[in-house]
Image (cartoon, rainbow, N blue to C red):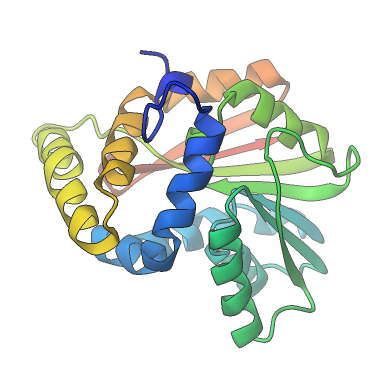
Amino acid sequence: MEHNQVRPYQHSDTSKKQEVTSMFDKIAPFYDFLNGLLSAGIDSIWRRKAIKTLTAKNPKSLLDIATGTADLAIEANKQLALTKIVGLDISPGMIEIGNRKINKKGLSNIISLEVGDSENLHYSSGSFDVVTAAFGVRNFENLKAGLSEMYRVLADDGQVLILEFSRPTIFPFKQLFNTYFKYILPTIGKVTSKDPKAYKYLYESVQLFPDYDEFASILEEIGFKKVTWKALSLGICTIYHAEK
């Protein structure tokens, strides 16, 4: 099965994009809680490390694709002297929770969130210094189309930062991780969010996603240069960084 055929519910009459939207709308109220619980809080450390890779060029504008509840956008605001941050997500439910978070923190003057399709961005070419995505590109219906759009809206010499789950390769951690992701995580997700398929999809989508050098090669194929990657937490997650 190819990566873009992995879908949360496998309904024959709906697209992956529709199913992903529906899934995230369903789990939105539990998303932040489950992320913290299931990663033991490590997800916030991953985001912090990822944003640190962007500091050298002192960017001013940032587009966060598949922003979810805006955690990466908020972290970017903490570390970088940005004047404009736009977060985009296909799920209205996630955007609603993200907006609540931003308003509570008093950041609505710098971070704006909107519902939209990452594979069909309405922004003009070259309009952002940085384009980011945390745990989102795996959910694209057409991976190369989504990455090409990220490339298009990026300014010349701009940076792309992608944080994504990957598959650990070290024994016995690889086996422990697979057991946790395949059996334990869906059970916790079922009890908490009432949508076990969402967490079954998480495991399947990670297994079939092209990670490490394979994903770096896809970024180069799109046109990105100076592509690097760094595995975090024994390979559970990987930071990909590149320039236009």
